[in-house]
Amino acid sequence: MEWVVQARAGIRVEWGPAGARALGPHSAVLVVVDVLSFTTAVSVAVDAGTAVLPYPWRDGGAEEYAVRHDAALAVGRRAISPEQPWSLSPTALRQAPAPQRLVLPSP
Image (cartoon, rainbow, N blue to C red; front, top):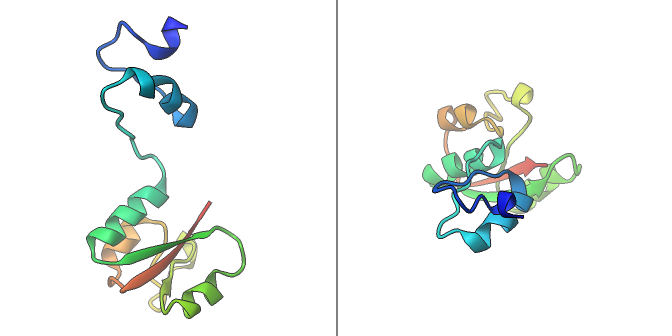
């Protein structure tokens, strides 16, 4: 299984949790390259001073959860409005005012 851990390579590339498990024990450093909006959105929100409250996507209870935690609610990218300018879109989050707390639904 030498090919799995790419032992002869100075830089190893793999994908997903299985790749991280395969390379982790054989690597001094693991770098996660973010290709998912959620992680980038969290980074943008936190950088703006917002506390992010993750929530399961399409659960149906996100709005009530946001109210209960006195938080703004991120909506779908196509559902943003002047009243709810937050979504998983990092660009939208950069342009929107930074709330104190933001419920960020994600798969």
